[in-house]
Amino acid sequence: MAKQLKKGRIHLKTAYWSLVGMVCAMLISLQPVMADTMWDRFSKIMKDVYGQLVGISTIVAVTAAAIALIVRMVSRNQRAVDEATSWLKRIVVTWIVLNSLGFIVAYLKPLIAGGNYTG
Image (cartoon, rainbow, N blue to C red; front, side, top):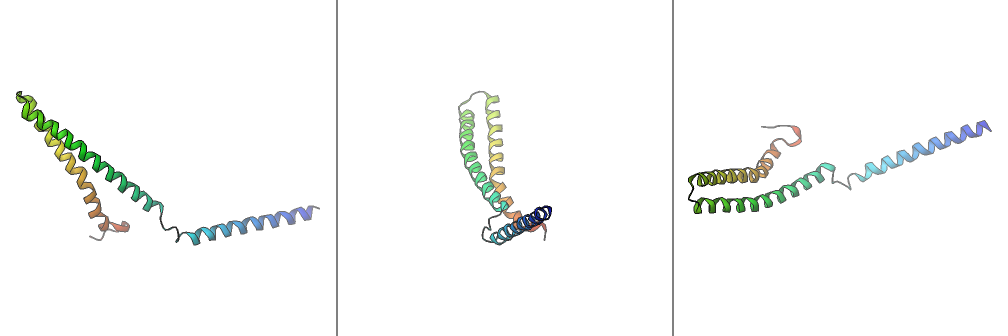
């Protein structure tokens, strides 16, 4: 009886490792079919988030710039005019930086592709 239990355990162990091998082989063979890797998916998500960020930042920048221009044109207080001009400069610089990030990343990506800088 002890020999039969030992023999059964060996068969169970062999069946388990055969199943593990088949699952691994199936996963390896399916990888080319499912070519969308985690990094490709992450890249798509980040592009979508960046596109939404640029759209929202443009609307906010135009609204804030309009308010700063109205304050600058309507106000009789020189300090308020100076602060509105300062805010207008900050808004424009920030908007330019946010919109140029996508260009910078798109320009630098081919240069450092694969972790090998070829410059």
